[in-house]
Image (cartoon, rainbow, N blue to C red):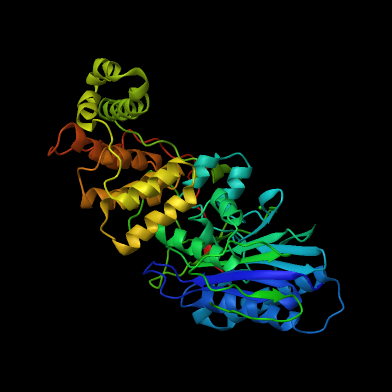
Amino acid sequence: MSSKIITIGKLTDKGLSPKRPYNEDSLLVLPDMGLYLVADGVGGRRGGEVASSTVVDVFNKIFNQQHHEDLRNVVEGAIDLANQKIFSEAELNPELEGMATTLALVAVEGKRAIVAHVGDSRVYRHDRQGLICLTEDHSEVNEALRAGIITEEQAANHPRKNVINRALGAEPDVEPDIVEIDIDDRTSFILCTDGITRHIIDEEIERLMKSGLRPDRICEKMKELCYAGGAEDNLTVIVADFGERNYIVEDHEKPAAVIPAKAASGHSGGIQLPRPARKFEVSIAASTEQPEKPADAPTPAPENSSGNRLTQVTQLTGADSKSDFASAPEKVELSSFMKWSLLILTTIAGLMIGTLLGRPVIEKFGSLFGARDIFNRAGVEKPPADPEVNAAYARYLEGQTIESRERLVKVLSDSPNNAEANFYLGRIDYAQGRYDEAISHLSQALKLDPNLHDIRIHLAMAYLSVGQQRNARDVLQQVVAPGSTPAPLPSPTPTTAPAASPASGAAKATKPVG
Protein backbone atom coordinates (compact mmCIF):
# COMPACT_ATOMS: atom_id res chain seq x y z
CA MET A 1 0.00 0.00 0.00
CA SER A 2 1.04 3.58 -0.57
CA SER A 3 1.04 6.15 2.25
CA LYS A 4 -2.27 7.67 1.18
CA ILE A 5 -4.81 8.70 3.81
CA ILE A 6 -7.64 6.29 4.59
CA THR A 7 -10.61 7.27 6.76
CA ILE A 8 -12.59 4.35 8.11
CA GLY A 9 -15.92 3.81 9.81
CA LYS A 10 -17.17 0.45 11.04
CA LEU A 11 -20.15 -0.81 13.00
CA THR A 12 -21.78 -4.10 13.90
CA ASP A 13 -24.98 -4.60 15.91
CA LYS A 14 -27.27 -7.52 16.73
CA GLY A 15 -30.41 -5.59 15.75
CA LEU A 16 -33.77 -5.54 17.49
CA SER A 17 -35.26 -8.98 16.84
CA PRO A 18 -35.77 -11.13 19.95
CA LYS A 19 -35.31 -14.12 17.64
CA ARG A 20 -31.66 -13.12 17.23
CA PRO A 21 -30.18 -12.84 20.74
CA TYR A 22 -26.61 -13.08 19.41
CA ASN A 23 -24.68 -11.13 16.81
CA GLU A 24 -23.55 -13.70 14.23
CA ASP A 25 -21.93 -11.06 12.01
CA SER A 26 -18.18 -10.40 12.11
CA LEU A 27 -15.90 -7.82 10.50
CA LEU A 28 -12.18 -7.32 9.99
CA VAL A 29 -10.31 -4.10 9.20
CA LEU A 30 -6.55 -4.22 8.53
CA PRO A 31 -5.71 -0.84 6.93
CA ASP A 32 -1.96 -1.44 6.83
CA MET A 33 -2.56 -4.72 5.01
CA GLY A 34 -5.28 -3.24 2.80
CA LEU A 35 -7.96 -5.71 3.95
CA TYR A 36 -11.63 -4.97 4.70
CA LEU A 37 -14.06 -7.83 5.33
CA VAL A 38 -17.60 -8.54 6.58
CA ALA A 39 -19.19 -11.95 7.20
CA ASP A 40 -22.75 -12.97 8.09
CA GLY A 41 -22.86 -16.33 9.85
CA VAL A 42 -25.75 -18.78 9.60
CA GLY A 43 -26.58 -21.98 11.47
CA GLY A 44 -28.21 -23.14 14.68
CA ARG A 45 -26.82 -23.16 18.23
CA ARG A 46 -24.61 -20.14 17.57
CA GLY A 47 -22.93 -21.95 14.68
CA GLY A 48 -23.22 -18.80 12.59
CA GLU A 49 -21.15 -16.87 15.09
CA VAL A 50 -18.46 -19.56 14.96
CA ALA A 51 -18.49 -19.61 11.15
CA SER A 52 -18.11 -15.85 10.67
CA SER A 53 -15.44 -15.65 13.39
CA THR A 54 -13.51 -18.46 11.68
CA VAL A 55 -13.33 -16.43 8.47
CA VAL A 56 -12.01 -13.44 10.39
CA ASP A 57 -9.38 -15.56 12.17
CA VAL A 58 -8.14 -17.16 8.94
CA PHE A 59 -7.81 -13.86 7.06
CA ASN A 60 -6.27 -12.10 10.05
CA LYS A 61 -3.51 -14.71 10.32
CA ILE A 62 -2.81 -14.93 6.59
CA PHE A 63 -2.71 -11.17 5.95
CA ASN A 64 -0.52 -10.51 8.98
CA GLN A 65 2.11 -12.86 7.57
CA GLN A 66 4.74 -11.75 5.10
CA HIS A 67 3.85 -13.07 1.68
CA HIS A 68 5.15 -12.51 -1.83
CA GLU A 69 2.37 -14.14 -3.79
CA ASP A 70 0.02 -12.28 -6.08
CA LEU A 71 -2.73 -10.62 -4.03
CA ARG A 72 -5.49 -12.46 -5.86
CA ASN A 73 -3.85 -15.81 -5.11
CA VAL A 74 -3.62 -14.89 -1.43
CA VAL A 75 -7.33 -14.01 -1.33
CA GLU A 76 -8.34 -17.21 -3.13
CA GLY A 77 -6.17 -19.32 -0.83
CA ALA A 78 -7.61 -17.72 2.30
CA ILE A 79 -11.17 -18.29 1.07
CA ASP A 80 -10.45 -21.97 0.37
CA LEU A 81 -8.81 -22.45 3.77
CA ALA A 82 -11.69 -20.76 5.62
CA ASN A 83 -14.24 -22.84 3.72
CA GLN A 84 -12.44 -26.11 4.53
CA LYS A 85 -12.06 -25.20 8.19
CA ILE A 86 -15.75 -24.30 8.65
CA PHE A 87 -16.93 -27.39 6.78
CA SER A 88 -14.64 -29.71 8.77
CA GLU A 89 -15.61 -28.26 12.14
CA ALA A 90 -19.29 -28.62 11.29
CA GLU A 91 -18.77 -32.30 10.44
CA LEU A 92 -16.84 -33.01 13.64
CA ASN A 93 -19.10 -31.11 16.04
CA PRO A 94 -22.84 -31.97 15.98
CA GLU A 95 -23.65 -28.69 17.70
CA LEU A 96 -22.21 -26.81 14.71
CA GLU A 97 -23.94 -28.88 12.05
CA GLY A 98 -25.20 -26.73 9.21
CA MET A 99 -23.13 -23.66 10.04
CA ALA A 100 -21.90 -21.48 7.18
CA THR A 101 -21.23 -17.81 6.46
CA THR A 102 -21.37 -15.21 3.75
CA LEU A 103 -18.28 -13.20 2.87
CA ALA A 104 -17.66 -9.82 1.25
CA LEU A 105 -14.15 -8.38 1.12
CA VAL A 106 -11.92 -5.79 -0.48
CA ALA A 107 -8.13 -6.26 -0.57
CA VAL A 108 -6.19 -3.18 -1.72
CA GLU A 109 -2.65 -3.03 -3.08
CA GLY A 110 -1.51 0.31 -4.45
CA LYS A 111 -4.07 1.47 -7.02
CA ARG A 112 -5.49 -2.02 -7.43
CA ALA A 113 -8.26 -3.69 -5.45
CA ILE A 114 -9.51 -7.28 -5.33
CA VAL A 115 -13.24 -7.62 -4.58
CA ALA A 116 -14.53 -11.07 -3.57
CA HIS A 117 -17.83 -12.30 -2.21
CA VAL A 118 -19.92 -15.38 -1.46
CA GLY A 119 -23.60 -15.11 -0.49
CA ASP A 120 -25.65 -11.93 -0.16
CA SER A 121 -23.28 -9.63 1.72
CA ARG A 122 -22.33 -6.78 -0.60
CA VAL A 123 -19.51 -4.49 -1.69
CA TYR A 124 -20.31 -1.04 -3.09
CA ARG A 125 -17.94 1.44 -4.68
CA HIS A 126 -18.56 5.20 -4.57
CA ASP A 127 -16.57 7.77 -6.54
CA ARG A 128 -17.10 10.64 -8.99
CA GLN A 129 -19.34 8.40 -11.09
CA GLY A 130 -21.69 7.72 -8.18
CA LEU A 131 -22.55 4.47 -6.41
CA ILE A 132 -22.20 1.03 -7.98
CA CYS A 133 -22.72 -2.40 -6.44
CA LEU A 134 -19.70 -4.56 -7.30
CA THR A 135 -21.32 -7.81 -6.17
CA GLU A 136 -24.44 -9.70 -7.11
CA ASP A 137 -26.34 -11.63 -4.48
CA HIS A 138 -26.02 -15.41 -4.60
CA SER A 139 -29.70 -16.00 -3.92
CA GLU A 140 -32.54 -18.01 -5.38
CA VAL A 141 -34.68 -14.95 -6.01
CA ASN A 142 -31.87 -13.03 -7.71
CA GLU A 143 -31.22 -15.94 -10.06
CA ALA A 144 -34.94 -16.14 -10.83
CA LEU A 145 -34.92 -12.41 -11.56
CA ARG A 146 -31.95 -12.69 -13.91
CA ALA A 147 -33.61 -15.63 -15.66
CA GLY A 148 -36.73 -13.57 -16.28
CA ILE A 149 -38.93 -15.83 -14.13
CA ILE A 150 -40.00 -12.95 -11.89
CA THR A 151 -40.04 -9.16 -12.10
CA GLU A 152 -38.08 -6.71 -9.95
CA GLU A 153 -41.24 -5.85 -8.03
CA GLN A 154 -41.93 -9.52 -7.34
CA ALA A 155 -38.32 -10.04 -6.26
CA ALA A 156 -38.47 -7.11 -3.82
CA ASN A 157 -41.47 -8.59 -2.01
CA HIS A 158 -40.79 -12.30 -2.47
CA PRO A 159 -41.01 -14.40 0.72
CA ARG A 160 -37.72 -16.13 -0.19
CA LYS A 161 -35.78 -12.99 -1.13
CA ASN A 162 -33.23 -13.66 1.65
CA VAL A 163 -32.62 -17.32 0.78
CA ILE A 164 -29.02 -17.70 -0.42
CA ASN A 165 -27.60 -20.56 -2.48
CA ARG A 166 -23.87 -20.15 -1.87
CA ALA A 167 -21.84 -19.71 1.34
CA LEU A 168 -18.54 -20.62 2.96
CA GLY A 169 -18.63 -23.93 4.80
CA ALA A 170 -21.82 -25.27 3.24
CA GLU A 171 -19.92 -27.75 1.06
CA PRO A 172 -16.34 -29.04 0.76
CA ASP A 173 -15.62 -26.60 -2.09
CA VAL A 174 -16.84 -23.08 -2.72
CA GLU A 175 -16.76 -20.86 -5.80
CA PRO A 176 -16.42 -17.16 -4.90
CA ASP A 177 -16.96 -14.32 -7.34
CA ILE A 178 -13.74 -12.29 -7.66
CA VAL A 179 -13.05 -9.14 -9.68
CA GLU A 180 -10.10 -6.74 -9.92
CA ILE A 181 -10.61 -2.98 -10.24
CA ASP A 182 -8.52 0.19 -10.29
CA ILE A 183 -8.96 2.79 -7.56
CA ASP A 184 -7.89 6.40 -7.00
CA ASP A 185 -7.91 9.05 -4.29
CA ARG A 186 -11.67 9.60 -4.65
CA THR A 187 -12.66 5.95 -4.23
CA SER A 188 -14.78 4.79 -1.31
CA PHE A 189 -15.88 1.26 -0.45
CA ILE A 190 -18.97 0.21 1.49
CA LEU A 191 -19.10 -3.41 2.70
CA CYS A 192 -22.25 -4.59 4.44
CA THR A 193 -24.33 -7.60 5.42
CA ASP A 194 -27.95 -8.01 4.35
CA GLY A 195 -29.11 -6.64 7.69
CA ILE A 196 -28.24 -3.25 6.18
CA THR A 197 -29.54 -3.68 2.64
CA ARG A 198 -32.89 -5.18 3.65
CA HIS A 199 -33.73 -1.75 5.15
CA ILE A 200 -31.67 0.74 3.13
CA ILE A 201 -32.03 1.03 -0.64
CA ASP A 202 -29.09 1.90 -2.89
CA GLU A 203 -30.36 5.45 -3.46
CA GLU A 204 -30.21 6.15 0.27
CA ILE A 205 -26.71 4.70 0.52
CA GLU A 206 -25.62 7.02 -2.30
CA ARG A 207 -27.19 10.05 -0.60
CA LEU A 208 -25.32 9.24 2.58
CA MET A 209 -22.05 8.92 0.68
CA LYS A 210 -22.66 12.34 -0.91
CA SER A 211 -23.59 13.95 2.41
CA GLY A 212 -20.04 14.91 3.40
CA LEU A 213 -20.28 13.00 6.66
CA ARG A 214 -17.33 11.05 8.00
CA PRO A 215 -17.45 7.27 7.53
CA ASP A 216 -18.15 6.60 11.22
CA ARG A 217 -21.14 8.96 11.13
CA ILE A 218 -22.41 7.31 7.94
CA CYS A 219 -22.30 3.96 9.73
CA GLU A 220 -24.29 5.40 12.63
CA LYS A 221 -26.87 6.87 10.24
CA MET A 222 -27.27 3.47 8.61
CA LYS A 223 -27.90 1.87 11.99
CA GLU A 224 -30.56 4.50 12.76
CA LEU A 225 -32.31 3.80 9.45
CA CYS A 226 -32.26 0.06 10.11
CA TYR A 227 -33.67 0.57 13.60
CA ALA A 228 -36.43 2.73 12.16
CA GLY A 229 -37.33 -0.19 9.90
CA GLY A 230 -37.35 -2.76 12.70
CA ALA A 231 -33.76 -4.08 12.41
CA GLU A 232 -34.90 -7.71 12.37
CA ASP A 233 -31.41 -9.00 11.48
CA ASN A 234 -27.84 -8.48 12.63
CA LEU A 235 -26.32 -5.52 10.80
CA THR A 236 -22.69 -4.80 9.93
CA VAL A 237 -21.07 -2.14 7.74
CA ILE A 238 -17.61 -0.82 6.87
CA VAL A 239 -17.09 2.50 5.06
CA ALA A 240 -13.56 3.30 3.84
CA ASP A 241 -12.66 6.58 2.10
CA PHE A 242 -9.36 6.63 0.19
CA GLY A 243 -7.69 10.04 -0.10
CA GLU A 244 -8.27 13.32 1.72
CA ARG A 245 -11.85 14.63 2.04
CA ASN A 246 -13.48 17.80 3.29
CA TYR A 247 -15.93 16.40 5.81
CA ILE A 248 -18.83 18.22 7.42
CA VAL A 249 -17.97 19.09 11.02
CA GLU A 250 -20.80 18.35 13.45
CA ASP A 251 -20.77 20.00 16.87
CA HIS A 252 -21.70 16.83 18.73
CA GLU A 253 -19.30 14.65 16.79
CA LYS A 254 -15.95 13.46 18.05
CA PRO A 255 -13.16 13.76 15.49
CA ALA A 256 -13.00 10.60 13.40
CA ALA A 257 -9.73 8.71 13.31
CA VAL A 258 -7.77 9.36 10.12
CA ILE A 259 -5.49 6.38 9.67
CA PRO A 260 -2.31 6.50 7.58
CA ALA A 261 -2.23 3.20 5.71
CA LYS A 262 1.16 2.16 7.16
CA ALA A 263 0.55 3.41 10.70
CA ALA A 264 -2.09 1.22 12.32
CA SER A 265 -3.94 -2.03 12.15
CA GLY A 266 -7.00 -3.29 13.90
CA HIS A 267 -9.23 -6.28 14.16
CA SER A 268 -12.85 -6.05 15.16
CA GLY A 269 -14.39 -9.47 15.25
CA GLY A 270 -18.01 -9.73 16.23
CA ILE A 271 -18.33 -5.92 16.95
CA GLN A 272 -23.89 -8.74 -8.26
CA LEU A 273 -21.43 -11.75 -11.10
CA PRO A 274 -23.50 -14.97 -10.69
CA ARG A 275 -22.52 -18.52 -11.59
CA PRO A 276 -24.56 -21.74 -11.43
CA ALA A 277 -24.16 -23.07 -7.90
CA ARG A 278 -24.97 -26.05 -5.76
CA LYS A 279 -28.19 -25.25 -4.01
CA PHE A 280 -28.46 -24.82 -0.28
CA GLU A 281 -31.04 -22.84 1.52
CA VAL A 282 -30.79 -20.28 4.28
CA SER A 283 -34.06 -19.00 5.67
CA ILE A 284 -33.99 -15.67 7.46
CA ALA A 285 -36.23 -15.05 10.44
CA ALA A 286 -39.17 -12.86 9.56
CA SER A 287 -40.76 -10.25 11.79
CA THR A 288 -43.26 -11.39 14.39
CA GLU A 289 -46.14 -10.37 12.12
CA GLN A 290 -45.88 -12.67 9.12
CA PRO A 291 -47.17 -11.28 5.80
CA GLU A 292 -50.09 -13.04 4.22
CA LYS A 293 -48.91 -15.52 1.55
CA PRO A 294 -50.74 -17.15 -1.35
CA ALA A 295 -51.76 -20.74 -0.67
CA ASP A 296 -49.20 -22.11 -3.11
CA ALA A 297 -46.33 -19.86 -2.11
CA PRO A 298 -43.12 -21.75 -1.28
CA THR A 299 -42.62 -22.41 2.42
CA PRO A 300 -39.40 -20.90 3.81
CA ALA A 301 -36.94 -23.25 5.50
CA PRO A 302 -37.57 -23.80 9.22
CA GLU A 303 -35.82 -21.77 11.88
CA ASN A 304 -34.69 -23.05 15.25
CA SER A 305 -35.73 -21.56 18.54
CA SER A 306 -32.70 -19.34 18.85
CA GLY A 307 -33.50 -17.56 15.61
CA ASN A 308 -30.49 -18.78 13.68
CA ARG A 309 -30.83 -19.41 10.00
CA LEU A 310 -30.77 -23.09 8.98
CA THR A 311 -28.87 -24.36 5.97
CA GLN A 312 -30.24 -27.03 3.65
CA VAL A 313 -29.44 -28.39 0.21
CA THR A 314 -32.27 -27.82 -2.24
CA GLN A 315 -32.54 -29.56 -5.61
CA LEU A 316 -34.43 -27.21 -7.91
CA THR A 317 -35.80 -28.60 -11.16
CA GLY A 318 -36.47 -26.47 -14.19
CA ALA A 319 -40.05 -27.70 -14.24
CA ASP A 320 -41.01 -26.25 -10.88
CA SER A 321 -38.82 -23.16 -10.70
CA LYS A 322 -41.46 -20.91 -12.18
CA SER A 323 -44.16 -22.27 -9.92
CA ASP A 324 -41.99 -21.50 -6.89
CA PHE A 325 -41.34 -17.87 -7.78
CA ALA A 326 -44.39 -16.87 -9.82
CA SER A 327 -47.25 -18.31 -7.82
CA ALA A 328 -50.70 -18.50 -9.36
CA PRO A 329 -53.19 -15.93 -8.05
CA GLU A 330 -55.52 -17.01 -5.28
CA LYS A 331 -58.94 -18.17 -6.50
CA VAL A 332 -61.84 -16.32 -4.93
CA GLU A 333 -65.44 -15.72 -5.77
CA LEU A 334 -65.63 -12.75 -8.13
CA SER A 335 -68.76 -11.22 -6.71
CA SER A 336 -67.09 -10.54 -3.35
CA PHE A 337 -63.51 -10.01 -4.38
CA MET A 338 -64.38 -7.82 -7.37
CA LYS A 339 -66.49 -5.50 -5.28
CA TRP A 340 -63.64 -4.79 -2.91
CA SER A 341 -61.05 -4.55 -5.68
CA LEU A 342 -63.13 -1.90 -7.42
CA LEU A 343 -63.66 -0.08 -4.15
CA ILE A 344 -59.93 -0.05 -3.45
CA LEU A 345 -59.04 1.06 -6.98
CA THR A 346 -61.69 3.77 -6.92
CA THR A 347 -60.48 5.00 -3.56
CA ILE A 348 -56.86 5.17 -4.62
CA ALA A 349 -57.75 6.80 -7.92
CA GLY A 350 -59.90 9.30 -6.08
CA LEU A 351 -57.03 10.28 -3.83
CA MET A 352 -54.76 10.85 -6.83
CA ILE A 353 -57.13 12.67 -9.21
CA GLY A 354 -59.47 14.38 -6.77
CA THR A 355 -57.43 17.55 -6.64
CA LEU A 356 -57.10 17.63 -10.44
CA LEU A 357 -60.66 16.88 -11.59
CA GLY A 358 -62.52 18.03 -8.50
CA ARG A 359 -65.07 16.62 -6.10
CA PRO A 360 -67.87 16.15 -8.71
CA VAL A 361 -65.98 13.34 -10.46
CA ILE A 362 -65.66 11.38 -7.22
CA GLU A 363 -69.24 12.09 -6.23
CA LYS A 364 -70.58 10.96 -9.60
CA PHE A 365 -68.68 7.74 -10.06
CA GLY A 366 -67.41 6.96 -6.57
CA SER A 367 -70.89 6.41 -5.24
CA LEU A 368 -71.08 3.19 -7.22
CA PHE A 369 -68.62 1.55 -4.86
CA GLY A 370 -68.82 3.65 -1.71
CA ALA A 371 -65.80 5.85 -2.46
CA ARG A 372 -67.85 9.03 -2.15
CA ASP A 373 -68.32 8.38 1.56
CA ILE A 374 -64.58 8.00 1.92
CA PHE A 375 -63.99 11.23 0.03
CA ASN A 376 -66.53 13.15 2.11
CA ARG A 377 -65.00 11.96 5.37
CA ALA A 378 -61.47 12.68 4.24
CA GLY A 379 -61.73 16.39 3.61
CA VAL A 380 -58.52 18.31 3.03
CA GLU A 381 -55.36 17.05 4.71
CA LYS A 382 -53.95 19.39 7.30
CA PRO A 383 -50.22 19.63 8.00
CA PRO A 384 -48.94 17.67 11.00
CA ALA A 385 -49.82 19.32 14.30
CA ASP A 386 -46.49 18.34 15.84
CA PRO A 387 -43.97 20.99 14.67
CA GLU A 388 -41.07 18.52 14.59
CA VAL A 389 -43.05 16.03 12.51
CA ASN A 390 -44.23 18.84 10.25
CA ALA A 391 -40.65 20.01 9.66
CA ALA A 392 -39.49 16.44 9.00
CA TYR A 393 -42.23 15.71 6.48
CA ALA A 394 -41.59 19.04 4.75
CA ARG A 395 -38.00 17.92 4.14
CA TYR A 396 -39.31 14.73 2.56
CA LEU A 397 -41.53 16.72 0.21
CA GLU A 398 -38.41 18.70 -0.75
CA GLY A 399 -36.67 15.45 -1.72
CA GLN A 400 -34.50 15.14 1.40
CA THR A 401 -35.57 11.60 2.25
CA ILE A 402 -32.69 10.66 4.53
CA GLU A 403 -32.89 13.84 6.60
CA SER A 404 -36.66 13.46 6.86
CA ARG A 405 -36.38 9.87 8.09
CA GLU A 406 -33.66 10.81 10.57
CA ARG A 407 -35.84 13.54 12.05
CA LEU A 408 -38.84 11.24 12.35
CA VAL A 409 -36.71 8.50 13.92
CA LYS A 410 -35.43 11.01 16.47
CA VAL A 411 -38.98 12.07 17.28
CA LEU A 412 -39.94 8.43 17.85
CA SER A 413 -36.87 7.79 19.99
CA ASP A 414 -37.93 10.67 22.26
CA SER A 415 -41.65 9.92 22.05
CA PRO A 416 -42.42 6.34 20.89
CA ASN A 417 -46.18 6.94 21.12
CA ASN A 418 -46.18 9.87 18.71
CA ALA A 419 -48.92 8.86 16.28
CA GLU A 420 -48.04 11.48 13.66
CA ALA A 421 -44.38 10.43 13.56
CA ASN A 422 -45.41 6.80 12.98
CA PHE A 423 -47.95 7.90 10.37
CA TYR A 424 -45.59 9.99 8.25
CA LEU A 425 -42.69 7.57 8.61
CA GLY A 426 -45.04 4.85 7.35
CA ARG A 427 -46.04 7.00 4.38
CA ILE A 428 -42.39 7.60 3.49
CA ASP A 429 -41.68 3.87 3.76
CA TYR A 430 -44.61 3.13 1.46
CA ALA A 431 -43.46 5.69 -1.12
CA GLN A 432 -40.03 4.04 -1.17
CA GLY A 433 -41.39 0.52 -1.59
CA ARG A 434 -40.58 -0.63 1.96
CA TYR A 435 -44.04 -2.04 2.46
CA ASP A 436 -43.46 -4.20 5.53
CA GLU A 437 -42.01 -1.23 7.42
CA ALA A 438 -44.88 0.93 6.17
CA ILE A 439 -47.42 -1.57 7.53
CA SER A 440 -45.65 -1.64 10.90
CA HIS A 441 -45.57 2.14 11.33
CA LEU A 442 -49.05 2.77 9.91
CA SER A 443 -50.58 0.04 12.08
CA GLN A 444 -49.00 1.62 15.16
CA ALA A 445 -50.26 5.04 14.10
CA LEU A 446 -53.78 3.67 13.69
CA LYS A 447 -53.70 2.21 17.20
CA LEU A 448 -52.48 5.49 18.68
CA ASP A 449 -54.82 7.81 16.75
CA PRO A 450 -57.59 6.29 14.59
CA ASN A 451 -58.60 9.78 13.42
CA LEU A 452 -55.41 10.52 11.48
CA HIS A 453 -56.17 11.73 7.96
CA ASP A 454 -56.75 8.77 5.59
CA ILE A 455 -54.76 6.48 7.90
CA ARG A 456 -56.85 3.43 6.97
CA ILE A 457 -56.55 4.12 3.26
CA HIS A 458 -52.76 4.42 3.46
CA LEU A 459 -52.61 1.21 5.51
CA ALA A 460 -54.87 -0.58 3.03
CA MET A 461 -52.61 0.46 0.14
CA ALA A 462 -49.59 -0.90 2.00
CA TYR A 463 -51.40 -4.20 2.63
CA LEU A 464 -52.27 -4.45 -1.06
CA SER A 465 -48.64 -3.92 -2.04
CA VAL A 466 -47.64 -7.13 -0.23
CA GLY A 467 -50.64 -9.11 -1.46
CA GLN A 468 -52.67 -8.96 1.75
CA GLN A 469 -56.06 -8.36 0.13
CA ARG A 470 -58.05 -9.53 3.14
CA ASN A 471 -56.32 -7.12 5.51
CA ALA A 472 -56.77 -4.28 3.01
CA ARG A 473 -60.46 -5.12 2.70
CA ASP A 474 -60.94 -5.26 6.46
CA VAL A 475 -59.32 -1.85 6.92
CA LEU A 476 -61.41 -0.25 4.17
CA GLN A 477 -64.55 -1.83 5.61
CA GLN A 478 -63.99 0.38 8.66
CA VAL A 479 -63.97 3.42 6.39
CA VAL A 480 -67.08 2.59 4.37
CA ALA A 481 -69.13 1.11 7.23
CA PRO A 482 -67.58 1.79 10.64
CA GLY A 483 -68.28 -0.92 13.19
CA SER A 484 -69.29 -3.54 10.64
CA THR A 485 -67.72 -6.97 10.41
CA PRO A 486 -66.39 -7.86 6.95
CA ALA A 487 -67.66 -11.06 5.39
CA PRO A 488 -64.91 -13.62 4.80
CA LEU A 489 -63.70 -14.19 1.29
CA PRO A 490 -64.51 -17.72 0.11
CA SER A 491 -61.63 -20.15 -0.23
CA PRO A 492 -61.23 -22.58 -3.11
CA THR A 493 -62.93 -25.92 -2.44
CA PRO A 494 -61.25 -29.25 -3.16
CA THR A 495 -63.65 -29.81 -6.06
CA THR A 496 -62.61 -26.59 -7.80
CA ALA A 497 -58.91 -26.69 -7.02
CA PRO A 498 -56.79 -27.64 -10.04
CA ALA A 499 -54.98 -30.93 -9.81
CA ALA A 500 -51.21 -30.64 -9.58
CA SER A 501 -49.34 -31.99 -12.55
CA PRO A 502 -46.45 -34.37 -11.93
CA ALA A 503 -43.96 -31.71 -13.01
CA SER A 504 -45.32 -28.77 -11.06
CA GLY A 505 -46.20 -30.85 -8.05
CA ALA A 506 -42.78 -32.41 -7.61
CA ALA A 507 -41.51 -31.87 -4.10
CA LYS A 508 -38.05 -30.44 -3.46
CA ALA A 509 -35.62 -32.84 -1.91
CA THR A 510 -33.94 -31.35 1.13
CA LYS A 511 -31.30 -32.57 3.51
CA PRO A 512 -29.11 -30.96 6.16
CA VAL A 513 -25.71 -29.77 4.98
CA GLY A 514 -22.69 -31.53 6.31
